[in-house]
Image 1 (spheres, one colour):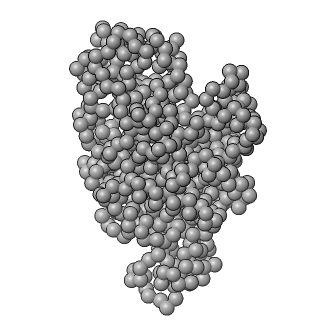
Image 2 (image 1 turned 45 degrees about the vertical axis):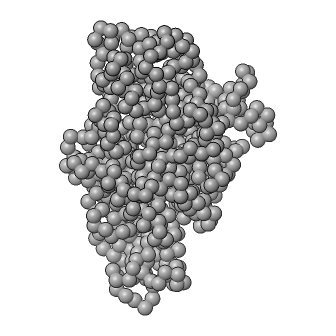
Image 3 (image 1 turned 135 degrees about the vertical axis):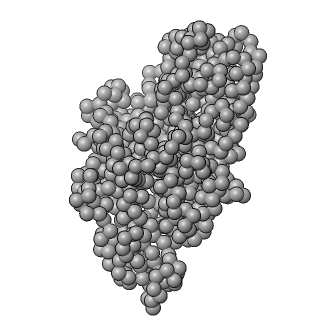
Length: 617
């Protein structure tokens, strides 16, 4: 299933197929394909995955090219293909089944089965035949694990009780020996959960939580490729149950932008907490990889790198390739393909990560990297009413051979808006430049207009469209949690009361018992948002003439102060008493510090806004 430039935006659409063909007739996710399934009384096979995913490639190159599979699919199914990153509303909907996710539906779109991961023809053909037989005998049954939609009622429990449940859900799966949340190793996709550990460790001055956060940070260090830099998807422990070939390398050899952003963020936290050089070295290794492989000339970032180069010799697999210990040795065999698509949500995560690295190191180049990416995305993707496209087709992306078409959706998605809103506010806090805040306000208002569900108080993954009647709209937990984080910070920064009740309403709309249970340990964003709302903000307000040396010295001191709940900004004269000298006020909903005029006292005053250790979980 390879798509080059001429197939990036459209797929073959056909309703009259030959009995036998040499390829599956894939269609795009859209009302036409679902109506065809209904009109022809065919089941639906939906393939959701991402470029750079090894298991997806195996399914694409081996299973979907098998003659028997092709014939069965074309005769009995309408086959639909979707890219989980270009179409994040679809990707999030089926993320429970990882990649590739293979979803089967009845002709009326009722989900009847979902498969996680790759299946070879020998095991896939019996699954297809069983579904065909069940349909013929009217025995298809609805899948009880089908994606949830909007909850019928909002959660009414105290937020602190919901927070405690989520804490327990995450903590129960912690590996206290090695860090991370599995027995076999540490995934570099766990960024939000590690941030959650760092936040709680700081809030309660809890050494045990800090130790667990640093153990996981150390495991991230072990996932770094020593030749080109960058982190692999996963690193394994000594007692791993992973295949021997993976244990030899110690990692799953794929590289993805979101994993690099996670690593930058975690190393920034670890470095600010310990000042240990190893984490600074880790930051530089990720940045080296990003500059070498993932950076577009316009400053934005590519998406992923496959696990091996095309045409690797039959006696060498991906593990052998990545074990080669020099750039020269690897290039003899070629280089693994890069997915040159640029996605707004993934780039927003990278922007936020680079801002965190800038705040940890005070190296201006990292801030410049973040700023340039944000400016490019706004120039290319910002729509007149304030929201951003998830992707556009670039010249480089159009030359890629893809497993899935690069679909450009001319509509807002929650993933792009929630993440980019947070990125705008991170730049505002790092620079004090009100332009970033103004853009964030406009984006937030666009989200409320296009994606907000006034009934539930949460955000839909996509706006209502012609498919809504067939595929119910969804209020995704983790993306809504990111939106809650964004709106909470925006409320404090903007002082606009219209945003004040939205963050809690969002969490109550989605943090429902059965949804939390369903998501298991994948609740890192939810955990972070709940901690912030229940512990409340710590606002660092700098009052003085912007640009004056005393005002800027206080702002710089605020930037250097490590406080995960910190919201730093310049404050207009009027909210606090006018003084002849610049001052900083550190406040939460309960109290404020004395006016701080000496930048060297900022850290000491900020420490007063930690929580009593007796409240620590």
